Length: 529
Image 1 (tube, rainbow, N blue to C red):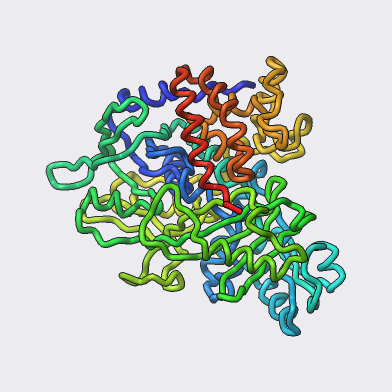
Image 2 (image 1 turned 120 degrees about the horizontal axis):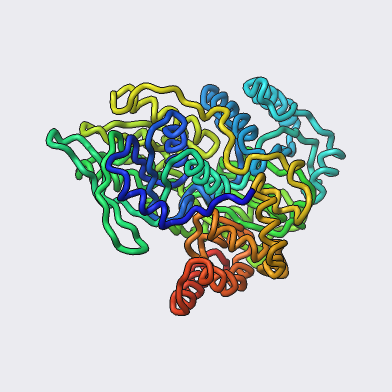
C-alpha cells in the first residue's frame, strides 16, 4: 500500500500546533535519530531538529561498517567490543534491507600472523554470542588468493576470515527519520536551533529554531532538550554556557572510492596494522571499493571537510603495498571525508589515541543533556542511555525502552523484495510502492546516468516520501551517486533538479541555482590527477 507523503508543510504545522514537547532532540545524525526514536518508543512527544539534511555530516561518511571493532579488541577494550557486537546483531535484525553480513580477510605475511589473528578473532566470535554472524577461520595461501585474487602474492602465508556487518549509512538515517514519523514523532531537516529557552530558575525549557527554507522563527518548549549534534555539540553547549569546556576533539577519516576491479569478489580486505599503526579497509560497496580510513586530528569542525594531501597519499601508498595493481589519483571516482566526534579525555590533547570511542553523556547545571562520542553501530544504545539519563534527572517520567527489537522503516529481507532492479531491494517493504510508481509512469523507469542503475523514480520517491529538499539530498544521501562517482553525480544533477522542481513547486531560478551549487560541491569530491 502506498504510504502517505511526508509533507514538510504538515511537519512545520506541527511546530505551531504543539504547545509543548516532552523531548526536543537537536541533531539529525545517527545519535540524534537514535535518541528521538528511543523517546518515541517510550511514549514521549518528540521533536527532532536538524540544521541541514539528515546525516549530512559524519553519519553519511562512515566506512559503511556495522562492527564490533577489531582494533578495539586489540586495545583490550572488551566491554566496548561486546556492546558493539550486541548492537551489530540487533541492527542486522531490525534493518535487514540495509544491513548484511560481510566477510573480511586479514592477509598474513608473517609466520606469527595466522595464529595471532585466528586466536584474537575466535574471541571476537565468542563475544558476539548468539548474535554472531559466522565463525572466523584460518585460510591457506591458495584460498586467500582465491578469495582476494588481486592481493599481493609475494610473501603471503595465508589469511584469516571473519565476519562483520556492512550497511548504507545515509539510507539507514533516512529510514530512522521515517520510523520516527511512523511512530508519531516530528523530524525536520533544514530547521536550525539558534538559542535555548530557560525558565525563571535558569533551567533549559526549550529551543529557538528557524525554518531555513522560509526564515520563520519558532519558540518551542520541552521538558527535556538533548544536544546530539555530533561534531557541533560544543556550539550548542555554548548557547547554554558561553565558557563551557569543549567535549569533542574532531578526528578526520578519509575514504577513496575505486572501481571494483581493484578488489574483485565479495570479500573485504582488512589490514590491522599499517606502517603508521592505523587500520586500513578495502570494502566492496554498491559496485565500488571503499578504501579507508585515516585518523587525523583536526582543529575545527565543518559540514564539508576536505582531505589533506598526506592522507590521500597514505591511502594510495598503503593500498599499493597490498594490491597487485596500485591505485593512482586518476583511479579515484569519489573522495569523502567524515569527522568523528571523539569524546575528549584530556584537555588540549591532539592525539586520537588519547580520546575515547565510547559515548559520553553530560548534563549541564541548567539541565541540557549532551551526548557525544560513540559510533554508528551503537547508535541505538546511545539513544537508550541518553533517555535513561533524562529519567534519572527527573526530566521525563519513567518508561521502558522498546527499541531493541523495533523494526526500522522498510524492514524486510531481500528475499521478500524480488522483482525489478536488484538495487531497489534497499527500499525493503517500500519497494512495491516504488515499483508501482514506475508502472504508473514508465518514463520514471529511465536511469539517472547510463553508467549506474539509479532511476528517475527514486528522485520522485525521495521528494515525496524521504524528506529530500535539494539536489544534494538526493544524489548524496538518497541514491548515493555522489559517494560512488562524483563526475556521474554532476552529470545527473540537471535531471534531478528538474524533477524536484515538479515535485516541490520551485521555479527556474531555483533549478539553475541548485545545479550550480551541486556542481561546486561535487568538485570537492574529485581528485585532480
